[in-house]
Image (cartoon, rainbow, N blue to C red):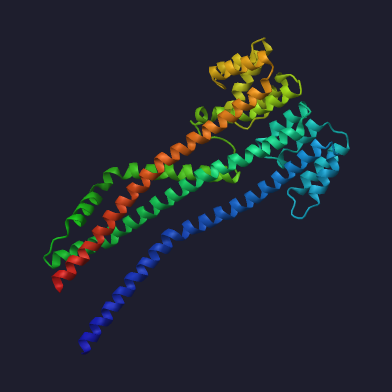
Length: 385
């Protein structure tokens, strides 16, 4: 009786120690991950709150500009609201306007009040006397861009978390559980099930492809981090090597602002020069600078945009036809909308094509892993019954 109690007590101690080891492992592995994830969530929430305030401020300015209301009192009213950010820059902008500083210069000194993408739009709106339309146009498309990046971010983050969590669980099982299971079956003189043998065989050769697996996980992690930062508004640039895919999507903002200049019967050269000096994307900015240089030498702006790969030859044909019939503004807006819809369609299609196969592959790996872990227990129970 005493021997039986001692054996049960020792088994309980072993189980408890094993459970403590598992808990320690998960705390060590997942503790920093949870802390970092919590920090990212806090930073993203803080930044989204700032962006919401910026959008509210831009919308208020748009209404004031449309109704020809004085901008300085409007800006001071926004600064006096509870939780306004950044209050000091708003008051400084209002002071400059009241002091008679030209609006382009005053808004140029207050770049911290606006997203980087909005700065050239604001300057172009001031140049073309259509500030309200430019601001409303920016807000409308900024909301659509946010929804697109939110969709991509959710898929990438879910996929990254799933694969990394699965890799950690598989690593722990192969290092901690699998050797003990193999030794136990050898002591009983039994062979492991074929599924388990296959799983152990694959794990023994996983070292050969481990660098590729780690590289794939790192690439997926950085893509998820990029979409998260892009969605939350912390960054506005593109990843290296993807400018050629996003170039026409970024050009949509330029085309829409050119449409405002056409509507106001303004010259296009100052608007293009503004975007060439203030646009946040380096690749677009350099190409627009070349376009401006071509226009100074007397080149046609449509042909120059095609030459520097900012629009397609088919787009040039549409613009040339619109110039002849007198509806260039409408054509520019249609091209901008087409570029945005095409990019959104391609991004969503790519996500829908890649996402399901990866999830199915992960499900197959999980099913093999679960069956390989469960079948040895079934065989052991059947042999001891």
